[in-house]
Length: 347
Image 1 (cartoon, rainbow, N blue to C red):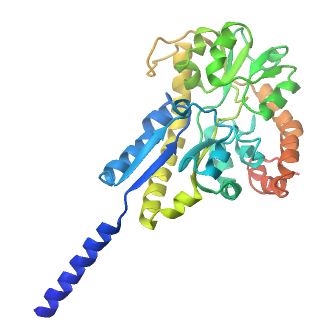
Image 2 (image 1 turned 30 degrees about the vertical axis):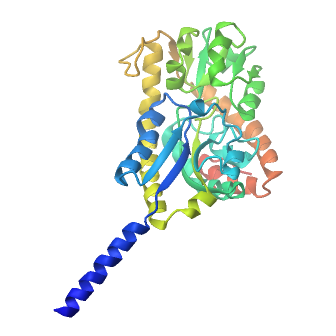
Image 3 (image 1 turned 180 degrees about the vertical axis):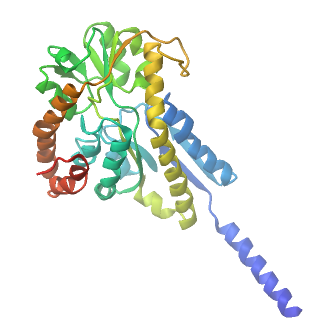
């Protein structure tokens, strides 16, 4: 009896000791642009759930890009410096610093989310490898909506873009426009409404929900469902110094929550895109709030897909490989072994 009692006391002491060893953790989180279902309904919720599950032992300060007042093109520099502990990074925004990341988001790389995920998953190891020089630990990747065209006049195909000034994000979308005899204009998302209103640009690319919630439908008349700017894909990364300071249990908790959210975000992406289209056109129920628009809608024709595929193969990918190989000599080879195999484009 005495031995049993002593063993019980030792076990209780060990349990108490390990509970006391669980340290409080404060996490600075940078999300993507707010006022979008993916951010408001899923990504923010992850961190709230972690706080609740740990009874406040883990606390988070969550800021979206707009709340933080930054554009996101310096995200990898913030990651290296440890400005934030965990960050959502747009691969397109940081392509100037790390061209390899934008391989999953080149214009015309995919026309549906199923193919896009296959592309992105095939390249996952490369994404993880390429954030390491920035003191980063790769966690997840997921898409927003395809970056489609909101235009002031009736644009229903690639031929209609000739002579137009188009707001796009990223050099590779600009290369694509050049091949279509259109001019790329660099504006932030918040500047586009006035740019369209004042005629500084004729069209702008963004996701359907972002465009609707920022009222682009008020200053445009046609919606062309062409992924001219990719899918605004993001990766979630942790600062390595912060990540390694966490206990193994806390790392497992955070990674598990983010991976569950990753699957949810991929699954919800098509529905969110369709919801934005319904709200912008007024065709069907709009659940995003506000008054629905009356834009005309055009899907991508097989002829336009073929034309964009040709530009992707002969212009966009070769130029991207050239810029990427300059900093990552195996870049083109790794693309061919992964994404190239999925889409049937490789040297």
